[in-house]
Image (cartoon, rainbow, N blue to C red; front, side):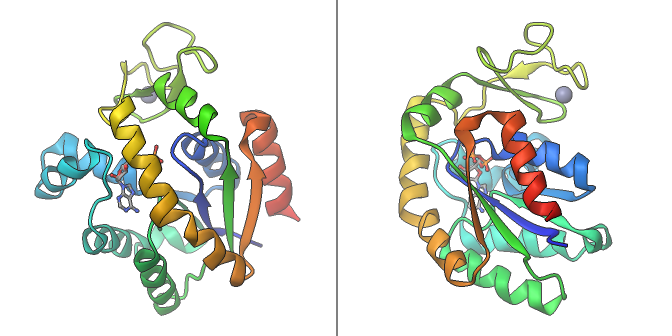
Amino acid sequence: MKMNIILMGPPGAGKGTAAKQLKEAFNLVHISTGDMFREAIKEGTELGKLAKTFIDRGDLVPDDVTIGIVKERLAKKDCENGFLLDGFPRTLVQAEALDKLSKEINREIDTVINLECEQDELVRRISGRRVCKNCGAPYHIETMKPKVDGVCDICGGPLFQRADDNEEALKVRLHHYVESTKPLLEYYEKLGLLKNFNSLVGAKTLFDEISQYLKA
Ligand code: ADP
Ligand code: ZN
């Protein structure tokens, strides 16, 4: 079974949505570094204060900080039955650190799922994105509307627009993706772990395709 998974793709490709579906279907622990940082910001911790200065601009949080929180999280007992890394690794330094630490704790990566999406579509998706303040569930004002305007279907929490989902920060995020994260595809291709999926097919079809692949 291929069950220690990395989910990759540019901002807006649908990692969060796919992660939510896969987590439920395959009973995986969902580890989203973005969610962990946002949680820390909400709680006002030192980590949150530090991360916020980078995130709001669209910049990457420094590698040592990010690697530290993932290392701690992956070592927890609940990860033993499989995990889904979402938004990590984003740099070569992170990928190499993950390689090392996943071997140390005997939780090696089985597969890397990459969601492909065109730039125009990324911009459209991110500018219309809304997120639940309580549970982080993602919505879109046109294509993934909640049943009641501004209210989360799952938990009833209020929906809001992320501070880094504005035009300026998005430009910076896409730049970092192309410069730092996209090269990792080649890294995982060489390791024989990469599997590409076209995310334009829509959330439901995409989920079916990934599920079939994981079950095969
Ligand atoms: P998206 O995939 O929509 O860009 P995420 O929720 O994954 O959003 O991440 C939001 C922000 O959190 C990133 O723009 C970055 O500032 C920070 N972040 C998340 N994961 C990492 C990481 N692995 N390394 C550095 N920064 C990260
Ligand atoms: Zn919610």
